[in-house]
Amino acid sequence: MRFLFRTLFFTVFILGFSLSGFSQDKVKSLKVMTYNIWNGFDWGKDSLRQESLIQWVKEQNPDVLALQELCGYNEEKLRHDAAQWGHPYVQILKEGGYPTALTSKEPIELIEKNVSNFWHGLLHVKTFGIDFFVVHLSPSDSDTRLREAKQIKSRIQELQSDSYIILGDFNTHSPFDSYWLESRKELRDGMATAKNEKYSNLRLGEFDYAPMAELLSIPTVDLSLGKADLEESFTFPTPALIGLYDQTPETILQKRVRIDYILASPALAQTCSQVNIFNHGATEKLSDHFPMMAEFQIAK
Image 1 (cartoon, one colour):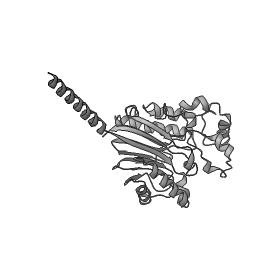
Image 2 (cartoon, one colour):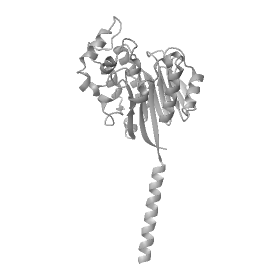
Image 3 (cartoon, helix red, strand yellow):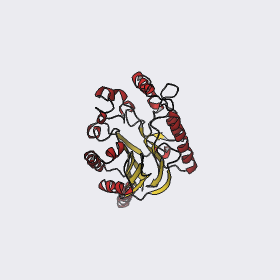
Image 4 (cartoon, rainbow, N blue to C red):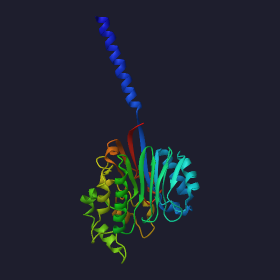
């Protein structure tokens, strides 16, 4: 009887250990980053900043990277940069203007390149089994951003998928930030001053949360919720702008906002284990935007 008990105990122990190992083997980490690189490193003239940013991205080792403002880039140039951070697969929205792009460690399936109904365009691709929508919404007009958000919402709802991510430079505020944004009178007044006859970044003179609310209703989850201090998660502007466009250290601090996001489907959001907004240190000089990265634990 004692022999039988010992045999049974060790069998259960070994079986449990094996199943535990099997379960761990079925899950892998997936790191997804978004980065607005600021006018394609001054349309390719700022090679020092380009080299520094490439090295920084390489050190972070994302599996998927969404990029905005690839000014002066074509596919060949993007492939050259992406190879340096370990991504053999790339898709770029367009050549000319302000292209977006996505690079990946795994093959990328192109779903849609749309440059006619969006301010900068919409890139929809699929990699790692996830639909990625790389966005760079209008930087100048709240009504245009709302139209763009509605188009993105329609596309995703037609997918009938539970695995999608929207990421990039949204140029809009989140209703989750209203608790601190509404007290920023100097920021709102500055945006009102910039208003022209055709475009406005405010809605009836107030901060505009409508585009982000539209995207959240798809539904999506703002991955920073519960994983970052939203008021300290500013992604624009950076100290790299000091001395340009009349920017001073004081004005940079006054204008800090969160306008770059990673939104994920509810099912995918449940697998998100970590979010980092890299808004201190080396990234202060690499672009006028700060990058952010989300890490998922997904089934292989």
